[in-house]
Length: 577
Image (cartoon, rainbow, N blue to C red; front, side, top):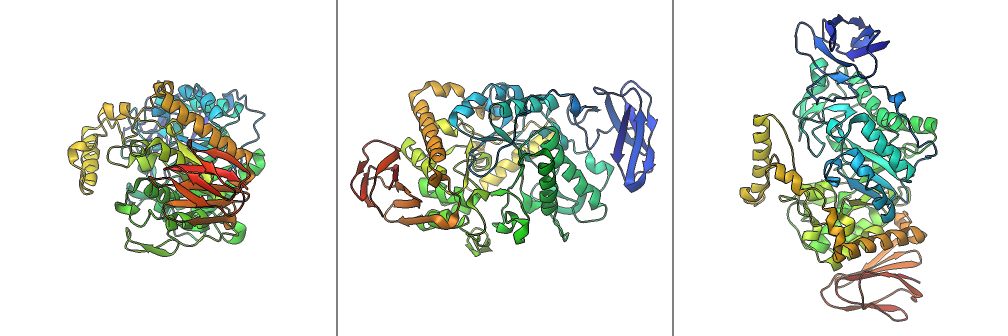
């Protein structure tokens, strides 16, 4: 016996269509819900709904599986049928962890969950603790970044569907790796979004990607429940260890209790029940520490947030780029502010926004581990016109300096797939919308966006061109080349040192001390010093203490005196006092 339910508060009639069977009238239930029972419709049964007298068969807004794509029927799926083998998994705490962001479709040539499993041992050897998957819920077409998803309960069919995702999580856990899933609740994708046909999931307002989700208007209780149930499903039924919530600043929510706080409460309750830590990580453009301030201290209680200021401070200092939102960044003073206070814009003037922006972090009450920092991520690479990685701009020497500053900062560090070996493959913006008008609109919009920033339209890759997707796949054969093997070995040593020395992973912002001079800086991390020479010439740097040991150097030729160090150009060293 299977009971089918769907929320359609404004419909006068709802029918259930089971493939190969006659349509069934559904019964209205309280709260705008409709119900029907089907004795023989077990797991594997395909079904859809019909609203009022419309003969269009629509997939379930809560569909667990869309094997024929987002426009096809939904399929009944039994979460209890999967044979998990991760019973010994007790979870992974975010503090102290190193994250690794990857896109399932381009991480391997095959582009599937199962193919990712074959590369997990590489990540274990690297020393990362948790993998973060770009969105995997169902979207229209075969390949996409994932932010055009429309089915918030169903893993993408081309990646391997529900069982494929479970196999990946199960395999990761058995290797000691946690799994974080990127999820998008601020908009529906432009094709295959049938949920709004069933009820008021959207408002008349809009954000960058389309109409806003209804979080505070009439009928918003069920819309919020829709999101909360999706969140709990990924964590409970797919055993994932955390979620990265995309662009929470685009959630229009005027409720006294914001959705984000409600999520934090529900996830804390689930973590208590499951007996393992669960993490909620926000992407936010607000620079508002209240997101990650514990609820007991008056915050929303999320566990962490991405910190673009940390990226911008490092990127501009290393590359010299100052265009667009990089304009205020690039100085050693800026990096000092970030390393000691998380945000650079903390109630300060933002020339890009032409206003003050952000709010200071209470360095004694908010731990640095609550800020995820990175030299590269999918946005900071893919939203460049040609999707070029930082390795296309920087020398291997400066790449190592940047990695050293990232891995010794008081934040939760994250690598983007291939960064550990200095991958040369770009990661470009790609889509595969089958609708010609939508495909043209996306490609035209992308070119116009970058033309406004001075890029010739002919240099911007067409997102719909299959070659744009193909170029973005990692080239694992690069690991056969000495320069890439050396970069990988360096990242392994750096991550291992971070884990071996508590001072280097200490998240207390008020314990970080930074001093700097002419293109050099010294960061004190307890009894360890991180010394970086960013100049194109050798420099002698005086140190606040006597050096006992050089723990790591990014290059050769580092000379240590009693209380000073001579660093070649573009070199960093970690020393113990």
